[in-house]
Length: 336
Image (cartoon, rainbow, N blue to C red; front, side):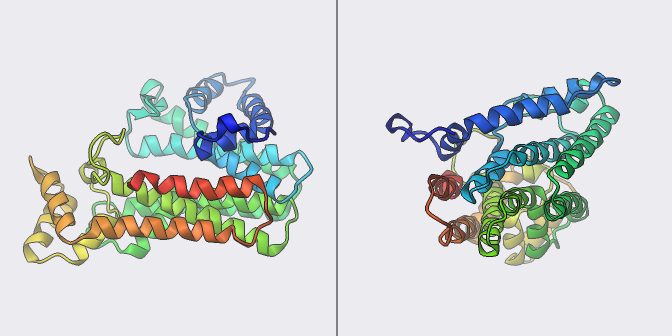
């Protein structure tokens, strides 16, 4: 691990974490490459490498490594668990791209487009199996329980998203369950498992689990806010994808709750019936703006970010605690 130097003060919190954990991350990457190999099915490493080496930020492995070091872990199994969460994440991406019929991921063609759906699903299954092999090697039933529960929550969230998609009656409670499965479950499992592996006091385990959960929820709400043009132009992503895919996110859910009869008819047409016409996205933006739900969504993301930061307050002083605090703040900087 490297210490932060003055020249690194302008780096983003994510970059600071990566530099602090560079030795661990190099070994995690080597472990990932070793474990994604297959003696009998060369398509497995081909597909896995296509996605894993496409420039992902490794945020989930870094959260696990950071939490274990913050809790003074002295062993080597944190690297196995960091590779575990990256394998789980990659497996879910492979499956998601098949379900969503996606053609692009991280600026590259998706595996299901380059190969086929069957290969993507089966390689995703293989990575889940590899993840369970890695987590068993750490020898902790409690860690196994945390990470296996996270895998189940992710799958449950995906199924729930299927059932709530295109349904204007989706509730905020259902939305929160979806984004916990989509993003927060693996964030919180990573931070909690790192603390449990280090045999940290229960108060520290709970604090880090709360931090990961709130960080993941805040991150996803910001993404959903941005999709309706929350940051104006030049945000580095397409806007309107959620609208076109008829996904129910917080700005829309709250706008529907405040809708009059004509607005409700509009949402039924574009979301439930899928009858979307030229200018409908702009009209949806106007309705959302009129009801103030963009500002409400923005504040919700800020509140979850503050929850994450507050959870760190009782943890021991450590450079990594400061970096995790800064990361929670950085997640919501996209709201400005």
